[in-house]
Length: 348
Ligand SMILES: Nc1ncnc2c1ncn2[C@@H]1O[C@H](COP(=O)(O)OP(=O)(O)OP(=O)(O)O)[C@@H](O)[C@H]1O
Image (cartoon, rainbow, N blue to C red; front, side, top):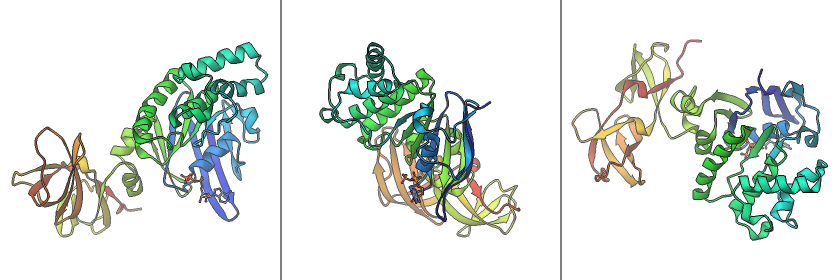
């Protein structure tokens, strides 16, 4: 039996449906990300789990118990907000110990547990610091320690890393994921950052306008997106419009492209998706001729924008230590048939 269950969760604000009958089963210890563009209903969903919003209909079941109408403070869940929401007049230690005090834990025990939680997030030397004297990353860790100290059955994270600078955010992703795995705490993260979701989650729930577009493990989501929205939102991709002209052939701007179209109807309009890194770009006179419009060195890779008879394409190639293609160069693109995903054109 799943540990946390959303059972047809729905939230309406007046006539507007922010979350449409969402169902999801989360296993104990799983790290789930709710990923989607601004306004798709991620935070609304998280707040229904936290008890900060009441669903219009549907249920939240935790460990077999219906908690839909349980007040937030009785759910015992750990929550970290983007804004951290620390008490400014309290030290890091007191901020972390506060939740235990509210739960009637005696002073000696709560100080010990707060110390341990701050050690877990590597803030052991900062217990007496006040939030104003800490960096954004340190405050974020205090907020995390405060959520973890109560040993919650579920940790809810609402864009907790988005106020941190890029380098720190990347470091914190790894740290947070390792800590979550070590503690085995079931976690739900709200994020609009696909890299964050891909790098931290066991499974990702992609949301679009209050609906679930796809639920899958990061690699499956990236390699086998169900539709062009997911393909475009998760990672970079090239989307090309075409028409199925024959069994296993899609015509894109009159160029015949071989694809696996067994499930597709000849004559149907379809979209093709191919990720930039699936191309091999070379000077060998084979494949699709292209002209390099922009060449950008990214360190680990080269990013190219190229013009071709199929349209403009984004291409990434690993940096192998030698010079890449330059603006204005001619080159050729090759790819494997399996690198192309076809959307649409399936008979109902
Ligand atoms: N109290 C409210 N009254 C009316 N509409 C609301 C209310 N709260 C949220 N909404 C609407 O519900 C939709 C979903 O909002 P939500 O905050 O869940 O989106 P989100 O995916 O978390 O977006 P973001 O990434 O920008 O935080 C939005 O269109 C929002 O305007």
